[in-house]
Image 1 (cartoon, helix red, strand yellow):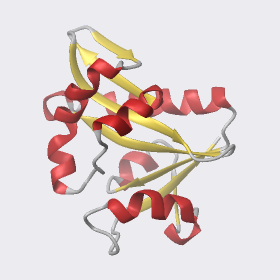
Image 2: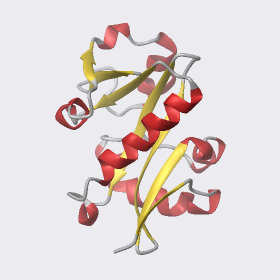
Image 3: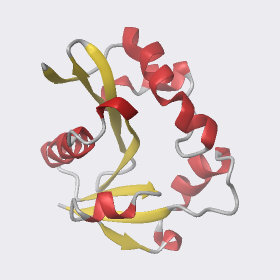
Length: 153
């Protein structure tokens, strides 16, 4: 089994959208259009097993101090191999390299992120531009049941 972490190309976007489709349909992950993904392609880290895309996530920079882990997905058949953890760890290393201080995650997977040393914070403490830029597009808005967690570098 050959596992490869890589920075995806715009030619990978269709496969990325197919991989995340069920989570988008259920409202667990926000829809990102092809154009949105193309303009932010450098924020993504992806993983392949034997040349097949099985997961990805993005490190979205909000400010000089704050970034967010977004769109974390690992295919069902590749779960249990610690690939999600490795994807987040890649993003945390990238955040350190960029000089960021805090990494945010809005998630339903509290334990997963707490195991990575994220701590729960109040959603009310989130920057307003974050709430209105993304959350308003969520099918669960305005009744948000995600948990906000923060990692301090």
